[in-house]
Amino acid sequence: MTAVTGLTRVLSVVGARPNFVKLAAVAHALRRRADVDHIVVHTGQHYDSAMSGSFFGDLDIAPPTTNLEVGSDTHAKQTAAAMQRLEPVLERVAPDWVLVYGDVNSTVAAALVAVKLGLKVAHVEAGLRSRDRTMPEEHNRVVTDHLADLLFAPSRDAIITLRAEGIAADRIAFVGNVMIDTLIRLRPAARALGTARRLGLDEGGYVLVTLHRPGNVDDPDVLRALCEALAGLARTRPVVFPAHPRTRARLEAPGLAHRLGGVRLLDPVPYLEMLDLTESAALVLTDSGGVQEETTFLGIPCLTVRPNTERPVTVTEGSNQLVNATPEAILAAASNGVRRHVTQIERWDGRAGERIVAVLCDGARFA
Ligand code: UD1
Image (cartoon, rainbow, N blue to C red; front, side):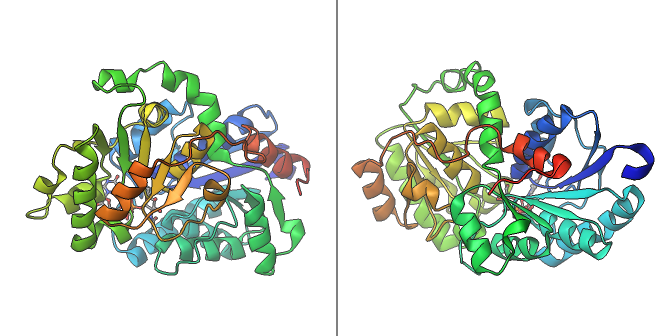
């Protein structure tokens, strides 16, 4: 295609909420290139307006041209449906590069289809490892990294991991963190919203909660313990909890909702509101990957309810702390206070998207 039109054709595949935030950084950088045709395909893994549609306006990027409407299902069915529906699209478009983002089922589906068609694949956010084989995302990360021709690493630890797994140095580019690009670009717009005030919350006076990992919400005993922990936190200050649909459904099990005490449950909030709520929080309790990074960049204390993290710099250099899913552990960590400091992590500087485009289009190297 390049030879005929003179344009480099880049096709991004996204499917789930965190993908859109990462895509936004790359789409913005690509927008400045007249020599690139950027096509965005949405698998439809996430489909509710609050989980998908609302994001493109907030992120100031064009909505995807194609939505494959894969929806929710078991891992195998969701991944297989994404592969089946992507294949004819990738075949028809025949892009110079297929870009895949993060670690969701749509990521690995797209990488597999593309390599089997002989298309070049670049993985944005490569080299992250929790080393926890019970996490669906971990399978997706390992497989995608080993399929991809080009790996865009967000941090130095990711490069060390990829090299240790035998991936050649010339396939890896240390570009920085795309999630932070989007945060830096949209932070002023987010702050202008005054979301905390609108919700009747004091700046710096509440706890913000997000929980959606199967390991936390699918086991009723773990979820019950987490509800008790949140109710305990809510006895001393307001707790707001924008709940993922998976979590909301699990909370509807008999006997769980009342354990949440004074916790304020919200529907999932759009990107800008979430960013604003994060920056105004006294403390964030989460199991999300992106939130660990955003709180580190902003210097907001973060308790991550997981036994491990694929983003170790947020713990070693940032404001993140891992905590067990028990009321005792969570309440103790919250009252001990978590470090609050703003750390400048190498190449988390708002320019990761720009570096990705320089590698893809100009052959730049970032070691
Ligand atoms: C997926 C990713 C996870 C990521 C998360 C961000 C995988 C394996 N997991 O998890 O890494 O952190 O997205 O949100 O890809 N649902 C809706 N509406 C939607 C989407 C989902 O109601 O728009 C509900 C459905 O009941 C569905 C459940 O949420 O069964 C789970 O959705 P799914 O896409 O399978 O995984 P997530 O938990 O969202």
